[in-house]
Length: 489
Image (cartoon, rainbow, N blue to C red):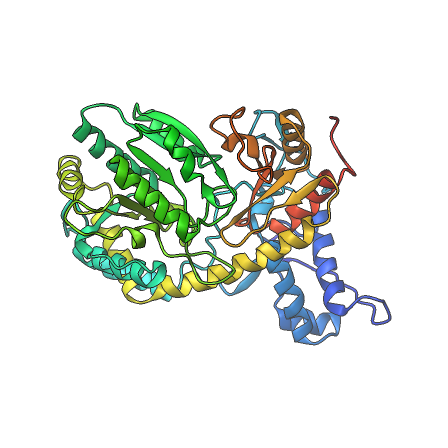
């Protein structure tokens, strides 16, 4: 059996060719992977060794490897450069290997193995395990056996309060912070608290289109889901007058999901004013609020929720670290106003905290070291570069339009003049081509409901930017959107 370090990489460069040496080396490695000469997990020669073998400068090889790292063909692993091990499970189409299969996210149809999973909600988790991360977990493990109050670790709550002050422009007392197991768990806590107080199921307004996972939480708890349309600036507040009995308004004002707009200050003030006047609570999902590419991050809605008295606050802000760190961290926070907090803490006391003390301690150490702030800056730059890749790949298409992306790790491609059947056909065709994407139709709570702006897409694709194989996936997606391989309509 061949040892992975024994890989031969036959490369030939032509200095008289019309392409640069960097491009030639990168193309040679890609061809070796596509042909099966290199397989997932194989270790490549060092840049110095390969440069000597091919007869080029080491800098040329480094530049070629950097390009392949960015495209997702190569990964850095234990001091070596390795072919992405994921390619062992997801062969590149055209390679002479036995075909495997997976299921279409929409229909369950058996399709070819995926080249790129571009479904939204899957962040780039590379680089998270660095010396600061390891040190944080070592320190937390040294205190194993520590117990924290149901509200959460005092140290973590203080670190979270400082984090939202610096990163989100929201001054909050650590006593207002409740540690959660993420946004969905935080939403469950808030809705159950309000329902117990009201003695009945709640009437919950949600954005349409909006985040399906949060709608499912509302419905699973037995509450009534009331979709209200959005426009390019977020939830249409004037339409809330048609929902006078609403108990909760669930919004993503910092970065509307999935369309991406940010709610202007005037509309934010109108929303808070409406909630106060109608005795409702606004639950703000601070989705991707820190990952803006243009300008500074927009302050959280809670920053406008001025508390003139004990019961004056009407905004609960939910946040997590799923997008900046990793979904598996399973830690988030809820900023709970004074009037709601005693009931929320009483419920938390009955249920207990779902977040282990060691995890809370590790995250507190990580935040105190300033590591989260540094990683957020790196991820913002990384996703901005990936946004630029998507814009370059999917611009100027006759039958599709990429909506502006000012932040976050997903984008929406509108299928111009399409219907649901056309959207499903494109999603399925992409899956057969090895690219998994989501259909825009899944985000509408009321598929036949009111559309308040002609600029809003009813049908299209939602694509994530977190995959290491983004560029490869975009290359395969473009012909489908351009009509060159258009599925039957």
